[in-house]
Image (cartoon, rainbow, N blue to C red; front, top):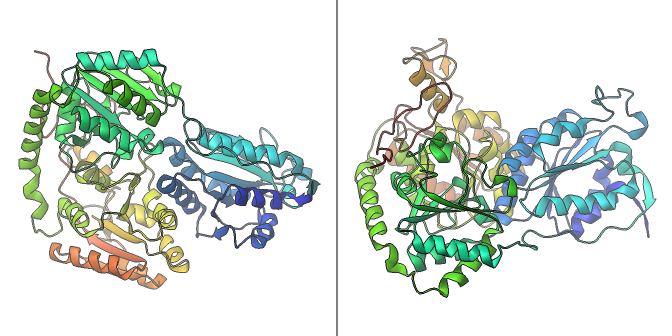
Length: 596
């Protein structure tokens, strides 16, 4: 075994694992690994954004596009504290990256050296990250690194993926020992558990006895790359599909059997199908409050009247909010393959079995289309939200990767966006983090350098991380930011106005006056882009938007498009959502299911 420094062991292992990038920011705590990365710079590239939060979101988005993890590198104390939100975002949406954090030298632990957390335990920063990672490892000697590195990757990628923290004391980067770089760890999807045949037989029996079945799919289908199997099940047997935000794109968006997102701001046909189904086959997604209309029966779902088959690789998700009729711990792809094989041997189910059910759904789709379609072409000032969604849909290429930040714009895309392929619509859903789309578009562009990557972000969210434009210029990344500029924290403004009889404070942006009546204010985002060396455009007229976006796509340069969007037009609710104890509201379009 060769004598190696700790930093060299880490760098060599990342190369062995075919990790192409490490996103990070230098600091005194991690400077000890920089020379090892320099020696391998032809095999692994260090990308240095201007904030650690950006590094984490970049790594998260990279994984969502490629399903291959990269690493981040942050220093002791504040540098690593800045990555907490990125880790929470990734954990909530089952995304994975290796967060390498630095800590104080072991010889100084518990002596309160610079940036040590020591109140409860020495070098205690790992406990800060404990709630937001799948596991944290803290090797305190060089000879502990090989096992910690291998276990870190195994933990990230087996079962339900998630981020892992490797917390390294400063001296371990520079100390040497005779060690061997460990063997390659597991790859995502290398081990896929399936259901036993008895359970598959029970599932098929439930499907045979149903008259109104529906699939509900999410991130688990994307992660297992089960899109072909789920699409075939839907096509062969005529079973409609409802998607979570992270499941959008896994089935053909233009198919009549693809119903879209469900919940308060979901598509009307999805909510109608969910609340009238007699069987829901849930694969790789959770029944959270937004996709379940805060669990009120009849608004999105109707359990326990409706029977439920719930399939998840994470056993802790089975029965979390609804007790399943059948609960299966299985990989989405393997389960779908088992179901395809089992159904192919049956003669009682064919595409005509649910003809009446599909006819009902077609009626709901027609009703919804008549309600929403006229809005997409309306020319108004400020620009209508629907016009922005349809403009991107019409102009962007089919292989577009769309990233969405948290904000009111996200609700509009949930209702109306039609992604053309899997892993092409990236959301911060579980943690709803502002900054994910703003920063993540850099990671998506690195994962797919030939594809067009567009982040649609709110004006508030963009201002949380505007430095990303400088990073895009620095590394020549042709990312496009469409800033949904409505001069407000509009999603929260709408809640506040609804709760408090139209009163508003602290949720809109004004200049000079502290409230309504003053001049609306935001920085000139186009000028900000130009100051960074990027292209910048301001769009205030509907007629200009498509042309500006098309030019930005053609130019292949970092670009910010400041689009002035109406803050007074709200997504039509088709389900409901509650912030207890505030009463929930009835849908704007459609009615909840009522027992006959």
